Image (cartoon, rainbow, N blue to C red; front, top):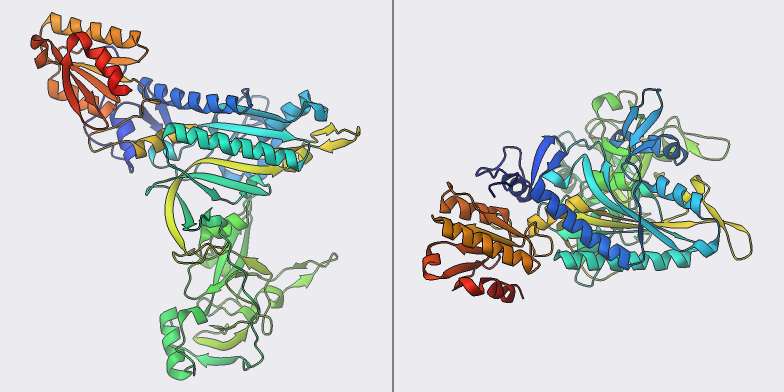
Length: 592
């Protein structure tokens, strides 16, 4: 400790929001350089490297081979796959002294694809799985939570290459099992959730989420085994409804109906139903959104949702990737006078909107695009805006009085909603994404012309899988799982040191004994940190031991004069005195 590059802190950093951020800074594992950029100090780097080694061991055991690409890459491969633009503002772009375009890689699909294209030409070369553990860069708009959401981070990314879809399925399953082994070895509980592929593309995608209250991902699961990120939850198909007996639309003055609740009250007073009262779920709420294209262009559109539900921008965005989605501003609405805020009805938007035309290939263009949430059944009747201030219409039927340009999963998933597979009601939880796997298919191989000759000598496009683990994020997840009010509690397999030898007291003999015990611990194959500081109180030393989080400690202190030292288990807080001569043997028994 007297030589270790370390400074512990007693107070939480002012910008820290979550326990992992607070403790990693206080215990001297990382230091902030700027928002979303951190220095890994010696103790933190040891943990990071131990996590990397577990990942590396399991990837190697699954037959993957490690390589290493540069993080600084030319523009051309990303332009070939359209990701130079599609990645939008998250991509760090720069120019060299010759004015050539480069980027700091957020991910390396293009490089892996081109490497295989350069090296392999026959189906006999496949299957192949390649991986790297590399620093990545994404210009996060809102880096937060310490090393959980950063602009520079360490990631393990792997890619499989197969001649056909059956081979891809086998590679995907092998990587899926390797991930389960990795997270089990780390002691992290995880849930495998169906997920959206987003900008990555592909036919199948699953996230490995560590259930945690501070996680940014929201996921659902049912008692019957269904699990999915909320962005990937699908609504069970809604059967068409018979609207034969539904009257023609009726416009009603609603001057006091500024909210859905007030609107329902007005209709229950003026036009009560015979079978039951009107409810918020009988109203059709039309929400104006803007999709922002990678080039910055803003496209206004409307989403129709049941009035008892709220729009989930994350779900809408996931279904419209690579667009970013936000609520429309008053400036966005200036060119659309037919959209009366608070009173927008479906009859002036979508296929029936003003300015809608059909181009040469039959595609409808112009007007205001209209998407309906998947809960809205064809033939269903609604109360909705009448496109005039202080007026609403009832008996507005989807399929009779208006059409839409399509359906979308748009509303927030609620606890108690039915699982898409019929396995029961859904519960909602939060989690930290620690891994993500994709069946990419041929998107990148086609874009970069990755083909090999098949058994018949015919050029065949290779099919790919992608498999990522946020290695630096795993360190934060481990802290969220392994700490108490005093500090960190590392699992043995990833701890920066296994044993913390604490010398408390005075006299050269005591400190010499501590050094001797530490040497014996190292000889037994364990890593050790000795608190050999001579002018530091016992209270500070114990506080540092608890903060730093070594799994075990040997305290050479007041009992030393009687020939005993104290063994401590950081996780259980159990301790016992043992003879100095058998301290290491007793420690090994304690570790098991």
